Amino acid sequence: MSADLFQGVDYFNLDDLLTEEHKLVRDASRQFVKREISPIIEQAYEDAKFPSQILGGLAEIGAFGPYIPEEYGGAGLDHISYGLIMQELERGDSGIRSTASVQSSLVMYPIFAYGNEEQKKKYLPKLASGEMIGCFGLTEPDHGSNPSGMVSNYKDMGDHYLLNGAKLWISNSPFADIAVVWAKNEEGRIHGLIVERGMEGFTTPETHGKWSLRASATGELVFDNVKVPKENLLPGKSGLGAPLGCLDSARYGIAWGALGAAMDCYDTALRYAKERIQFNKPIASFQLVQKKLAEMVTEITKGQLLAYRCGQLKNEGKATTQHISMAKRNNVKIAIDIARESRQILGAMGITQEYSIMRHMMNLESVITYEGTHDIHLLITGADITGIPAFK
Ligand code: TGC
Ligand code: FAD
Image 1 (cartoon, rainbow, N blue to C red):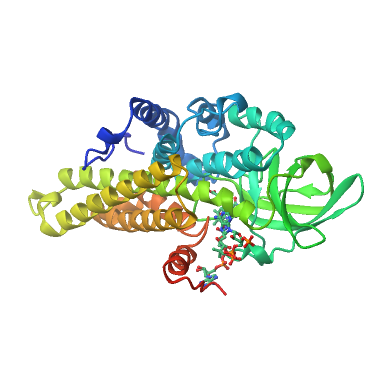
Image 2: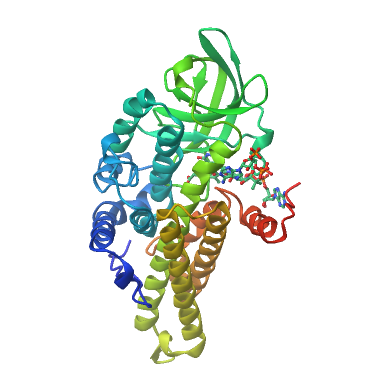
């Protein structure tokens, strides 16, 4: 891969709105990506192997539970810092950001928000330090966009719960130490359970053959009469709203993360266009190439303002599911479009692993599908503005 010359994109002086802490957090994450991710990511992608050696470094930059209070091992940062970390990690690779998103928003957040004090003390510090890695099991083979139809279930056996069912497409499952699993009780009410690796009847087969998110490990969670101790049930919230509350946090992080991938593609394409000579001129001098680049920076800028405002609202406790949906949907779409346009600017070179663009483009095909598909997010906005849900 060519040298990592990334310099950030800030056409509307967004840095002026950031605090010193935001900039320190962002810059530390950027340096981490240049030092630890860029040199190894193409090989990890080709090998379809999550580079587990980076877990300690991710913990050190505060990528595991950035907004979880320090008393539980988190970094105690605000949501804009969280977003900036996700932006920088996804600038490196969506799969690396995925690992941090899942750990922070889908594992630490539910334990923090719905767990009791013992659960918080037992799991959160180890998750923050990277000593323990978690995954989140909501999607099932027959229930993706419609998680309320899930069939995974547990029965009360007196001194323990007996869990049965299967989850599919689970990030980090092949190596996770714990899984936050959503399953129905005998009344059909959804609850979260913490399932630990090593529990009898619990297996995590890896999913192979992905052309997207190859540097992230994806797998199944299979529960065959797993005895789950009663103290592993998250007591604080039940119903579909419990997992959807976690998704609000993760989708918010993706709204920033996707901008990172878009920025990397734009930065690469701009640099290439200024250097590549055709018809005795840099290709950046042709109007059609300038149109592509000018539209890219415009969309990145609009996406940054959307993400920043969403972060302000989140800090004030005012960001709604619908705000977050719009930001996730818009920013992932502009990122995938920018990746495709950037790839064209690089011509044939754009399809090689010498440059990051094709990898981002393939990754974004997962990002536009997970955490709610592009169309599901459109329907969330549609339901909000019309008052008529069109999901069913
Ligand atoms: P609906 O009737 O709208 O709601 C059911 C109940 O939930 C409540 N609720 C929420 N509560 C808290 N936070 C939210 N964001 C909430 N949204 C809804 C709602 O009030 C209701 O409560 P109650 O008491 O009235 O029952 O539910 P629905 O079944 O119609 O579904 C709506 C829909 C389609 C939007 C929802 O199911 C959805 O978002 N589907 C998409 C599924 C999805 O995003 N899956 C993601 C899996 S995890 C993942 O992809 C991780 S990728 C990780 C990585 O690698 O980065
Ligand atoms: P489906 O729900 O079958 O959708 C197929 C198509 O139908 C989509 O285009 C969708 O928009 C459309 N559609 C569905 N319903 C409607 C409707 N009502 N109206 C209009 N169109 C509709 N899940 C987890 O729980 N944990 C994870 O860690 C996790 N990690 C993932 C990692 C990767 C790499 C991937 C690809 C997925 C991951 N997922 C995870 C699963 C992800 O959340 C689901 O793939 C996603 O929610 C969509 O579900 P589905 O793939 O079953 O598609």
